[in-house]
Length: 341
Image (tube, rainbow, N blue to C red; front, side, top):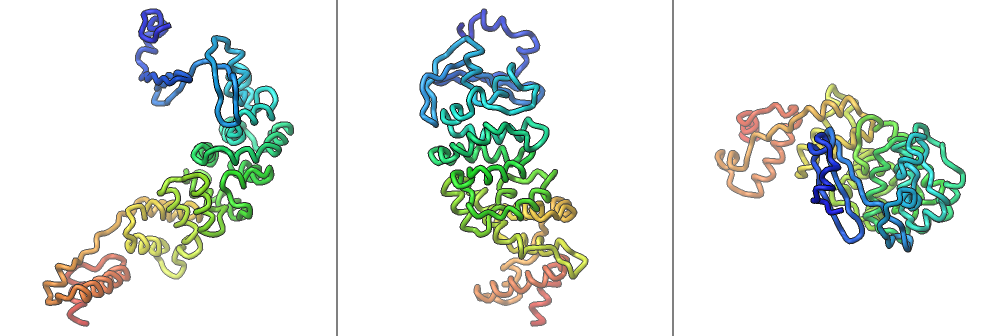
């Protein structure tokens, strides 16, 4: 049936015609993407696997819903079979489905976190098949692994699922450190609950040193922003903490942002506060605006100082005075400090 034929168009009711619909076709399959009530949906063609190599499948089109369901990895992807049961199982033999595409191991974890109500409700056969075939993930591209891992990290039961990844020896094949800080992960997973952390914020709690972030990047090809966030948290999680000897506990974080030349400094500090469980300070930080430093090199030249090196030194000294004042000192007051010195 042609997509633009009257026969095809007649399938759409008046309500469906109001949907935002985008058709995308390639040589293997056709997708229909549509938006309903501001939520995106995707429908694809029915297919049968002709051949698989553990990463990709050669397919043929079909009109048989049962045959299409049988090639799916998980029963929730054959919705008419098992969705309402809220149980994630492989279609047919778990071992066979995994060996057709080893990425299905991570898809299992991801859908488990999305669908199942409680942790620990796994079929023993499924866990055994995952453990036996985990090494197959070594042949899967890092980009595909990272897509699934990020989704899992923002789903339910993430603490249970990460522990399961280590118990089943999946971790070494997806870029995670063999010797992970699981105690730190337990603490941080509680800290961030309900605060929508970025996937990298939570994942970083498994890392003991910055080199763990570098190794993850080599395996998964994470973005520069994600890598820098991981490096930042590992470096600062123990030293950049709230002030306990003053009435301004947020000030160390504010000073860090003031001194930073990174446009993402505020966002990274907010992720660090989630990591540390500083929820009150996080709210304050989200409402805080970076105050502009009121003095420029031009202002210093006006008081008779022309040496570039000296101007740089003075600007830093004035910035420190301004920070000590809680960012309250104004230009004239700061410039008068030059005259006194």
